Image (cartoon, rainbow, N blue to C red; front, top):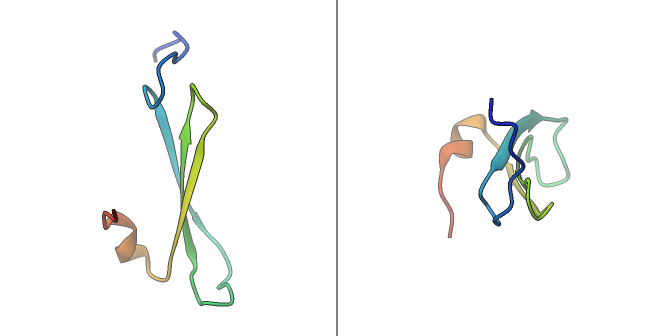
Length: 57
């Protein structure tokens, strides 16, 4: 495990996948990306778990 703190933006990214009760648009899964250096959060929601590996631009 690397104990050196991240200094550059997006040098270290943390990722979590959460399952929740369906929302108003029936999305059930949340992908959460967190930049350790900048404390920047990015969140995407998905209806099916199989869609969580798709890349969107």
